[in-house]
Image 1 (spheres, rainbow, N blue to C red):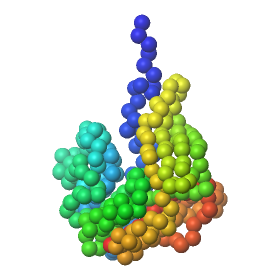
Image 2 (tube, rainbow, N blue to C red):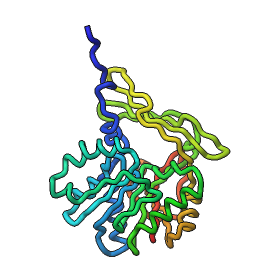
Image 3 (cartoon, rainbow, N blue to C red):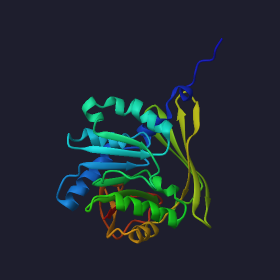
Image 4 (cartoon, rainbow, N blue to C red):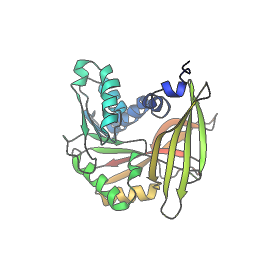
Amino acid sequence: MNAKPTEATLADRHVLYQESVQDVEAEIDFVQETFQALRGRDAELLREDFCGTANTACEWIRRGRAHRAIGVDLDADVLQWGIDNNLARLSAEQRGRIELLQQDVLTVKTDAPDMILAMNFSYYLFLGRDELRSYFRNARLSLKDDGILFLDAFGGYEAPMELEEPRECEGFDYIWDQASFNPINNQMTCHIHFEFEDGSRMDKAFSYHWRLWSLPEIREVLYEAGFRQVDIYWEGTDEETEEGNGIYEPSEVGDADPGWICYIVAEK
């Protein structure tokens, strides 16, 4: 008799990632509102670097008939998953306004976007300043004259620790695993695992070898790459819960929390 398949064997890791890691609605809210506030106009063309399944780019397309999007990623399999699962949910008219490119973000050339997004700490995969500067320089050259590069970053005094951090999601647990950290070069290896209600587990659904870049380093390299203004948008605190309130504003002072996530807004 064949054994009953487990929830882990039936699950799709990309679906789990989108449900547990990404909040594309809040992300697009932030970049759309911030661009409009800084430029006094609405953005139209968005480029999502390291786009993976292009979930964010698809959300941008859904937000307005004038919106266009370009997604760039090296992984052909993940791009195809995005085409089959995310772009397939768009209308034919919407699909006509999005383009996915299997290319290297260090060298890709595209129509000049209003905004470039490199989210989910994807640029942390650049382990040296020269490579990181090359990416930022290519992004800057790609942008329109008044374009903006949006990044996110994470840190805090738990960021370099070796630890596992579980979080309950609907129907499964998401587990963030900081498996190793080298304080000499700030390189770290992290994994995402998923655990299910039947006790089964999807180990190392995603793995990353990163450099834990600090905000001063990122800011310095952005200026070296030619950006004229780089601001850190820090999350405010809800006075009642003393938790993050989801509102990010420019700040020169952050909280020394065990873990934080912020946005970086680099103006060309």
